Length: 303
Image (cartoon, rainbow, N blue to C red):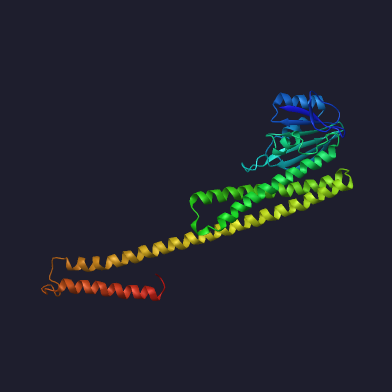
């Protein structure tokens, strides 16, 4: 789907226009192959770059092709779904184009005029889009970190469901770490290669600081997950050892009377076989052996 919008300094709100115009914003969401071909021919854009903008495995980077600048960034289209997707921004002499698989959350705010988005000021539009992308990353990061902290408090009582959820959060954090790292490189390269006003350059530098803080927060949370996993493995190992010890002790305690009763159950002449109280003596003997054995294990702190 391709939509065209335009707003100049004189306009009070952004408006949808029927076709391409100088200073317009072209918003492309989940385009078909025909629409990709149309954009290539009509706007003289690189088809391979347009297709890469839909590739979810694309790494954030900056590409110069003719008079066009392609910004491949990562975006969080939906905080609730905890997904990160590729988002392409193209800056041309005559227009700004955004392309993505799904519609980002901030696009609606732009169309409802909640954001001062003047399409004729292309670099300022770029800065605002990058700002909202950073904001989305920050919200997703905080959402994941809160879940990790909640799991941290329940380490000893983690069930399979919580463990699977923790592994999911670890996967998201790894994705965020990679995205933050390459986005930082993109911001730094953008400052060096693109001419911004000093005020806009300062905003980009702030984005670099925020991205670095987000990166460090994700790394810290990943370390917490790693520590929780190690602790849980040790906890399970100790529980297993304790269970095995209990079963071993129980087996030994059962085998003692089994062995004695087995001997006295043989059809041969045995000591004290004619003694009327021999059963009581055997029971007392078994109990005595049990007491000695348990006291020994207690002193050795085995049980």
